[in-house]
Length: 401
Image (cartoon, rainbow, N blue to C red):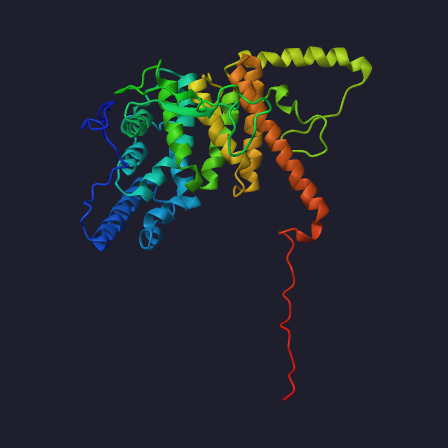
């Protein structure tokens, strides 16, 4: 089973690039017919996945018979676990891998919900790919690379060969939200400082070692665009991989939690040392710094990898959402808290000013959010949502005739 990835062009009107976001359904087609075609594509994709998964795996017939089969597939933790088990197998990611072929074809679908199913596996796919490339570069991973190139091609077509830039207003000029302390001498129009968040993308037909971080980073950008629709278990997997990428055993990750009463899972730290133990503790900490040089630290969720800014930037965006989005469950926030502290320790070891500033800011925001939540819970313990409340009896009013 071979993958055929078309080389993408920087022009948005080029026919060589593949754009899964563009619907192949004509605008004048009957809505009922297009809805039925979407249902048929989703059911065909579910039946194809059913033939790939082991026979002892779960039954997908109930998902295929639902009113929204693609959405049911996305929101099924059992399906996610079954596909993840196949991706974690030692021989996954090769050229004839049927799971990678299914993900590739699912992402090329015109159904938005089906594309979301493929996007939800980006954390596992990118995490396994980067970890295996670092551990053993001789192993062919054409299946993983085909899916990553499809994601890269779609983002290249969407951007149209232009960079992603941000406009920062000049704070010396008054605005609706602030008045500058020193009034500017000339009341000229407010200038804008243009910053480049991402440079223009170049067409790629294969994953070269010099472009690997860029291609995976663009795939993570695609994931970040749809992160509000991603299930919590997909976000959890990404946080685990980010923790493994940074290196898990560095003591610097608990730097912000040594003087706090609140404990986060994985960050229990003793408060201070005796005077006679300070020298020995410093020596031990210096010995632990050698972990920043050790690339053999691997785990089932990934291995320690190089983290250039083009890969670290989308990683921090995703972790920032997992950490601060109010609708995320607490286990996702805890996993993101662990990941951002490990990334801060890694950035401190690698002496990356941008990464240190970003990760330190996220850690501080996490601390303040947890402190505010604890203060709110202590101030109003009766409003705990986990405490069941008795159902009130209906009031009965007596009226005299």
